[in-house]
Image 1: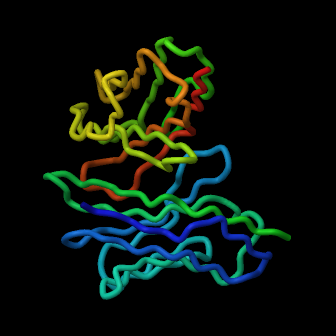
Image 2: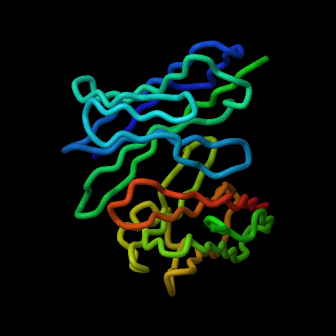
Length: 114
Length: 114
């Protein structure tokens, strides 16, 4: 079945450091890919998405490129802020048994220190 | 729009008691999801409804769990009898249509079973 693998956290960075959170996936067909973010005490919210190979999703300084050849969708940000501290989930959406099923990764906790 | 509404936000109960969690999806959304989040197992999909019909309930842990969606604006997740291992944060999410991309998550219900 479909699966998403994320790097384990927690990831601790100093403010203004460069961020990479790795995500690879396994899926049949052509899935859509997503990054969701969960701030403390809240539900998940969509951060960015890409729906086909070579698409780049971007939002709030974060970006990720859909790489079909490496089945990856790594999240990057050039300069993190304390307010970026959260848990980040990689996810894919693909056809499964006749409906669009979403599969989430286990989440990667990011802590940014001043 | 008020977003996805869940109630209660916190629930503390004793083992063996019945627990009912409630969700009001965003108006006009016709897909609804129930998730459970724990430190050990991460985010797990419990059940998915489309147009009020359960499409995939393979994630429901056992017969103690049941979910209903009597109409497009209301869903319940019931646990009877509850057990300490059911302690988790339960999220409800809705999506505009079956092929839509973004899931909108509610704030979650933190359940503690003593």
